[in-house]
Image 1 (cartoon, rainbow, N blue to C red):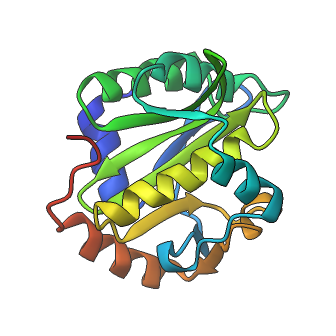
Image 2: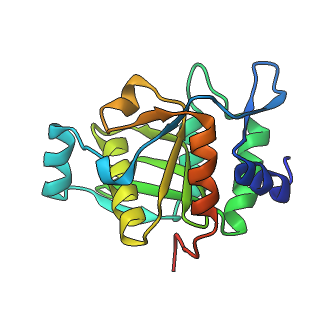
Amino acid sequence: MIESDLLLHGYRLGVFPMAMEDDSIEWFSPDPRGIIPLDAFHLPHAARRAWEQRKFEIKIDTAFADVIRECAKREETWINSEIVASYERLHALGHAHSLEVWQNGKLGGGLYGVAIGGAFFGESMFHHVTNASKIALAALVERLRARKFTLLDTQWLTPHLVQFGAIEIPRVQYLQLLDRALNLPRRFTD
């Protein structure tokens, strides 16, 4: 298991861990870096309609272990048992969080990440119900805006994230944004 202090220190420096195919852990700091500017977030039309209809129940930190394990259930994944255990420990310490989308009493999708100061580091998301991960991301952005967070780190830019307004910025610029965000007295939960 990765020590929690080491994980938090890594995030503060702009690096994060990923499991490799051989189960070894490597640390990354992409250049350019993917972020979603909170003031430029865009929810695609179908997901926006589902969000407005409120057919889902949004919960926070009620099923962290389920969320991270669902995120790991992919053919290609960077989430191995060591990553799961490390982030479950970080969750127990109050630094890692899950945002869950429930429908009819069942977990339909969600995401997890790490909050430090005014920065949220998105790690992964999943869905079993159409639009559930998009709804989770919209709920996350709404929460971050309401609590005056300034940075939503997506690590890399993917075609999936582009539809939400994600962009790439140079590492130097990212580290400046990160430094400012880390020094903000913000809380993800009450």
